[in-house]
Image (tube, rainbow, N blue to C red; front, side):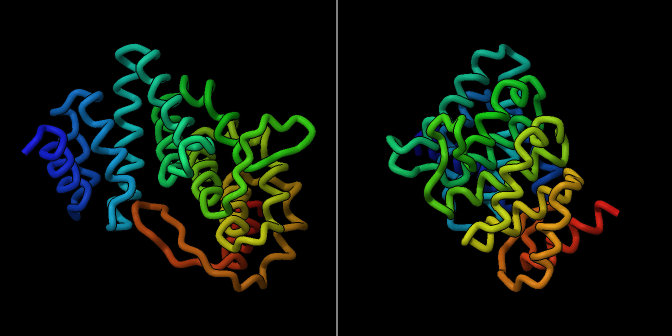
Length: 229
């Protein structure tokens, strides 16, 4: 078995275990560069839990890279960005989630790349051409902004108006994730728009607190409003 396949198998075993969070430190047995390829593969795993946990692992890898020398971490973030562009053939599944976890782990990365992450959900007069037309790919970005808001809200708040605009997105997951993020930010300017969504029965799944939850848009909008009280 090749080193890549063996590493991927071992990493997957860690991420698939019930004790995955306590076992993440086991990833330190590999050099960060050895983990990048297997993790890019595992972000497409058939197991939903493994896919989400892969994003967390990517964040830890990015942190180790940044601590060793920022340029290697920047290369990883630029690789993420390439996966998000049209030339990659829409290979961006799981990538914004990994970008967010990297920025959660290292503020230097958040300072450099948070605005790029946000640019995937909006296109206005200052649009730089990053807007994702694919609604399902945008879901990953909305979740990523929510995750980043939990730990480093100051990097998401400047883009909150685009989250408010997303409350009218045709995709229920995007509406719900935007509402969730606005609640985390306690963005008062969104209160009226959130109030109009409390009866929205659109369904979505949300990964938080280490597990996937079944939610409704209305439930997340109501929760967001409660956080503002």
